[in-house]
Length: 177
Image 1 (cartoon, one colour):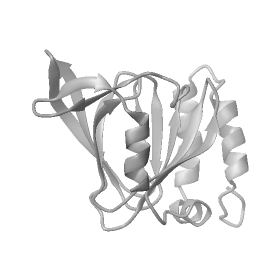
Image 2: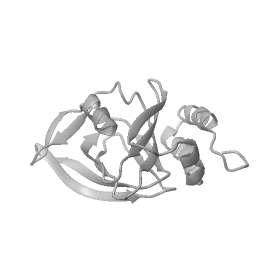
Image 3: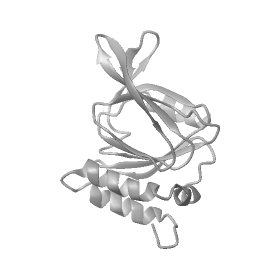
């Protein structure tokens, strides 16, 4: 963040890469993300949330940084990441429903609503579903402690929920639609 309240994406990404090498990378990334989210309007000006999309801002084997924009009312069912994640919201909102494995399916285990300025860190074993409950495009920066697109993970579909391999292309297509 510059003195003028402008969000500097390049500096933010440099800070994220540096933070990812810290002993407690999750905490360091959370601190970098919280600094950016302290001025959500500046982030929104730099990363305009104008349509549903997932944009890769940085990708390596150790760290993935995404701009994620959810359309109003958009929902993504239960899924895991198999790596830690830090999420910062700069417009709209994300409602997260958390789950735990229960037998062959899932059991609900709480939730968390995020609004502009909020940051949350998720553990590598987190299973969650996400909904944008607002009438605005929900803009977020998602930072993952690994190769988000190259890591095999799961999603749960149906009633009751059944685990299956996560279909990255289907999810990307849903954001495009």
